[in-house]
Length: 268
Image (cartoon, rainbow, N blue to C red; front, side, top):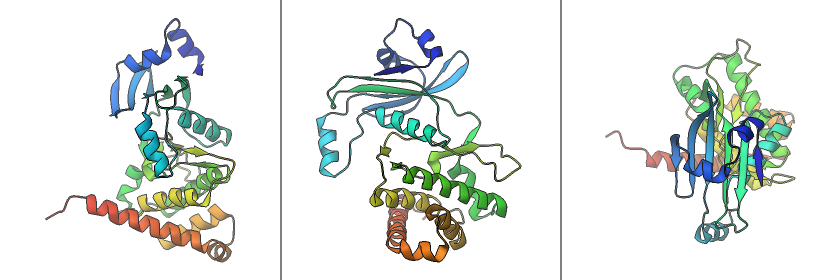
C-alpha cells in the first residue's frame, strides 16, 4: 500500500519511498531497534517521519502471550489518524504512508506527517498549575475539551493506549477566548480501532490521563465536570451507574503514580 500527497509524489518521483525514508537524513527524535522518528524539510516546510522495520517473531509472540496486540508498523497510526479526522478531532496531518511485505514479522512501513509548529504539550503547559493556578475559565474550558475528546474517541471505537497530557499539543499562544481551544492528539502508533471501545481500554486511557494530571492541581470538582461530560449524564447518575469504572480508574491511576514516583531519583 502506498499513499503520497501531490507534493510528495512530485518530490519523490522515480524513487522507492520506503528505501528513501529509511536512508534519509534528518534530526532524529527517537531511535529504537524497529522504529526511528526524525524531522526533515521539503520545500521549506517541516515534516516528521516514522520509519518501522520488522519487529520479529519474538516481539510478536511476547505481546500475544501478554494478551496485547503487537504493533507491526505504521498502519495503526495511519488508520487512527483517518478515524480522528473523520470525527473532526484535531491531530496530525498525514502526507505519505507506505507498507511493504506480507510477513508480519518483517513488514516495513513508514508514515510522514506535517510538523505541528508553535506548539506546547499540555503536560508542559499545565506544569506550573500546582503552584500558580490558571484562570478558572481557562481550566474549565480545558477540562471540557479533554472530556469531549475522550468521549468522542471512545464512543467511536478508538482508544489511544498512551493517553497522557504529553500526547496532546496546543498552540503556545492562546486564543483570548478560553472556549476556542485546539488540542492536537499525537503519538498514535499504539492506538486501537474497533466498532466499540471495550471497558478495559476505556479504563486504561482514562487512568493514564488522570495520572498525568495528578500534579497540576486537579480538584474533585474538575473530575466531576469531566465525568458529567464524558458520560452525558447528571453527576449523581453518572457516579452511581459507572461506579465500578471510576473505582478501577482511580486504583489504576494511583498505582501508576506510585510506580513512577519510585523511579524518580531521591532528593537526599
